[in-house]
Each structure stands twice: as C-alpha cells, then as structure tokens.
Image (cartoon, rainbow, N blue to C red):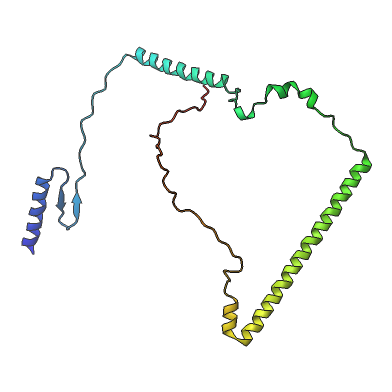
Length: 199
C-alpha cells in the first residue's frame, strides 16, 4: 500500500513537471489540491502625463457633450415630416369653401333619436336571447337523442358521435411550387436605397 501511494505521488510530481500550466499534488490526507492557473504578465508602467493635458482633454470632452445636448434640445420640438400625412395645398386653399356649418338639432329630434336607439337596443337584446334559447333547445334535444341511442346500441352511439368530414364540403387547391419562367433574367440583388433621411 505504501508503495502504491508513493508511486501515485511520483506520477503526480512528474505530471506537474511536464505540465507548466497547472500542478496537482496529493496531501497526506489523500485530498487532491490543485494550484491556480497562472498566465499573467507583469503590469505595464503607467506613463506620467502632464495634468494640464489631462485637464484640457476633459474640457474638450465636456464641451463636445454640451454641444450635442444643445443640438438635441434645439431639434427636440421639430417633428420629422411624413409624406403620407401632408395635406395638399389645394385643400388648404379650399378650407373655407369646404367647411359646413354645424347643424343644431331641436330637442324633439334629439329625444326621438334617443328613443329610437333605446328601442333598437331592446329589439337586439330580445333577438340575442331568442338565439341563445334556440341553441339551448337544440343542444338539449341532441344530448337526449344521444342518450337514448346509447341505451339502444353502443355501436350506433359511437358512430353518431364521430365527426362528419362531408358535413361542410371544402376543397382548396394550393400550388406548392411555381413553374420556372422562360427567359427570366434574375436580378443580381443590387438595389437603390431611396428612403429619405432627416438630420
């Protein structure tokens, strides 16, 4: 056993000598200890600079940032023009001709419109309730018929609850590939960027 331990230590020492990056050693209590990987260089000496030059650089940097801030504040209120939202000058010139005076409705007309809207809302509510009741009746009748069919025959019940694909016939032919166009000169991928840029 002592010989085996000794040979293990020799082997780990020989590995440590051949591998300059990391060494592994066995402590007396047989735990593995590894040394950290050391691949550092000595620090370069800092060049001593004149404090006046450092101060000038800081001042220049500060002035540059202040100039950018002023430019942004100056252009903050200017909105980028959007071509689609520009109103044609002809419409601007005809604005007074196109303006219609606001029509003032008398109270009787306003009251008539309010009553008409209320009556329409009541009608639509009754129609919706009737539709819900009809759907409930149909579903109850269907479930009752299926229960009776299940009591009569299990095979017919299983066949009845299967979905019918022919109930709503739908056919759709889709081309999965297009034939090649004869004598087609394909573009080489170059294009001219015509998008507008605002500074």
